[in-house]
Length: 525
Image (cartoon, rainbow, N blue to C red; front, side, top):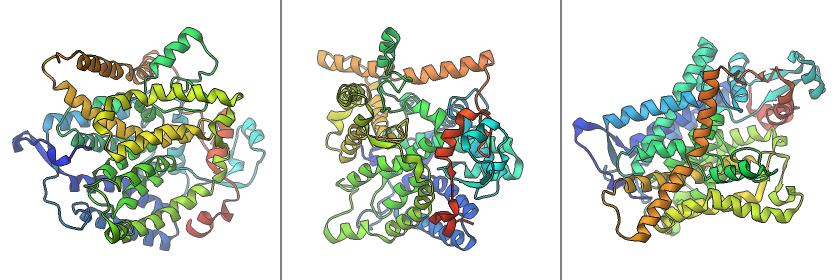
């Protein structure tokens, strides 16, 4: 990444100054608050108090240490950006509008995953923490037949930490207030991400929100091929080959905002680090929001150790920085709480194996893989590779995207859909920087090769907009025509409205015999 110290500044009357240390502090506060609410609401009082003190203490130490280099020396306060007010206002408006139109809070027509998101928030409001369901409350006979039980209890397990601030507001003021809080909370996370991306572009640019909204692979090409041929392997826009998919930003915001917004912010903080003494806290906190994204961010975290200016040092210093008290303690506490919590429902990942083993003809995986990489990864490597070829973190991100498709976990392959989020975000940060620089070119290059490169670059930019534009068309069109949203198809995991969701809910959200698991036996209330 480019040195943040190269960022241009503006006069005080044009905006406000944001230091890297302040950005880290606010961002970690945003990420840590839901974790603290989870600890207080879900854990036994003594464990909740101890873990809360540890998390708060680690965060304070990490913030204080964020302005020091790998040797512990204070870095001069030159790491900042001054953002003109028009950009601040624009980013706030964009974040709020983007949260609204992607369905956060369900104030507009929503896409396919929102019945689950709405049920999560409602149950966190209506049920005592930890959330325990009684089979007897299921009123739909079809649901009862699928479950096979009419009595007994199951625990709710999922990566729902992002909903905790809104759920707390909902317990006090009701569901409508919780929805408003969720919208504002999500918009704030998006706003922070836009500010962080701006730091890496060296100057304010509307290329940042453009890429943040529209970044995607060239899914328009296989979609066009499907329109012309109607080939059988096509499932949905980003699912044009069996068992593999990288998801467009806008689609992620519409369906799994609870994972993608904190993931992008954590990735930014990792890229901005000046030392490795708090890496386990910075990157590890992502486990509270998306265990899949943690898999994807690990190679980038390891690669960041190789950076000359942001590495861990050499010899004894390297070992000392990596095995710092913050790293050891944060890794232990995060894994103990959230690792054991997710392992309570280990059956949710029983569907797994090498991707080619799910093909009727395993050799068909080869052309499918090559097509997938050509559509999702290759265009951006060609655009950015020359400038970023010496950046170990960029190389790690590309390698991650090349390797992930070889393995499949879950029917839809959450490993590729969510595990790819950190690497794809790094690419879009680089792309936003590239677009910012390109848009400032005033004269048409005389070199034909350069001109062809610019044409190809903007063609990629145009084509990648297709998934977002299609989803916007569905959302706004359905809102205008008054189509019925699916947001109440589930209602509550404790009383499922439509039976078609039952098997997925039972597999992904229910923990049977929860009292025998480590988390619910020793840590939970």
